[in-house]
Image (cartoon, rainbow, N blue to C red; front, side, top):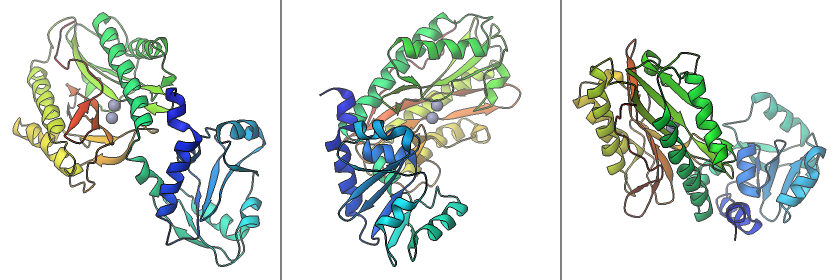
Amino acid sequence: MSLASTISDPGVTAGRRTKLREGLEDLDALLVTRAVNVRYLTGFTGSSASLLVTADADVLRTDGRYVEQAAEQSPDLEIAVDRGDEWLAKRLGPGVRLGVEDHDLPWARVRQLEAAVEGVVLEPAGARVERLRQIKDSGELSAIAQACRITAETLTRVLAAVQPGTTEREFAARVEAGFRDAGAQDRAFATIAAAGPNGARPHHEPTDRAIAAGDLVTVDCGALVHGYAADMTRTVAVGAPPAEQRLIAVHDAVRAAQTAGIEAIVPGATAGDVDAAARSVLADAGLKDAIAHPTGHGLGLEVHEQPILRSGGVATLQPGMAVTVEPGAYLPGIGGVRVEDTVAVTEVGATVLTVATSELPFR
Ligand code: ZN
Ligand code: ZN
């Protein structure tokens, strides 16, 4: 089977819906309205999509633009074509307890649904599909691994060629062109390239600032393969050793923190354990106040998914999860360092999927 078919084959997506149905005892039906969740459960990638899951039938709704695509991508499903809620009114009656994705549904939409289906009882169903999505199957892991391979190879190649004078924007464009040349579907998110003092901003948008000799440059990027993301960051010195000497020690500390975070990943460890392992290394290096974000996050169809590896996080790590480990230290006005890898959680620990050195070479 091709990679594409192991990810969204009707047999695979039907299995996911079965798992979802098993957890529905408290409801008569579930209405899935997040497009990414519909995609996970049906293989349908159109932007107009919702899915009704009941005890004995699943119905995929889309609009006229996507009828053909829906039939092709989800041949096993009944397809309703509707821009409104009549399809629901037809299938649900008074007293039906209908779970909705309350974490994503605007209040106005809740009121619309209540008005559309007479007597329906809407229940907040929470992030059930997102919880299922935390554990990847083998097809999903293959897609993530391929995205990670492309990302690591591309970033290594682009970093090796970077020279003073290159702008942040050019740098980001080279990375993204490299992804496409290597066969990726797209970039998973807009590449971050932050040179010199801009590195102090974790989510800096690339500018026309030319990289100067002695700048530290942080590049955060990820390829997309069959809808699945990779996420990786390296910080390197360009042209000369860092002009800000202090950043050499910061880079060492961030790398050590990342190693500690990855080593803390074992099935049964909590998200908070991993965060604490990385955070304590930074704190010991005097960088407690330079930390600006959690240590990592799950990823898959979205770049940021559960579990978030944050301070006090109670989520338990399990085999089949894919998460990032990305400690960083940010010194306003001076610069910053982040080192990020995507790893797969296995029965015995973590396997790094974005394999590339994180040393601080001078380019
Ligand atoms: Zn990242
Ligand atoms: Zn990340």
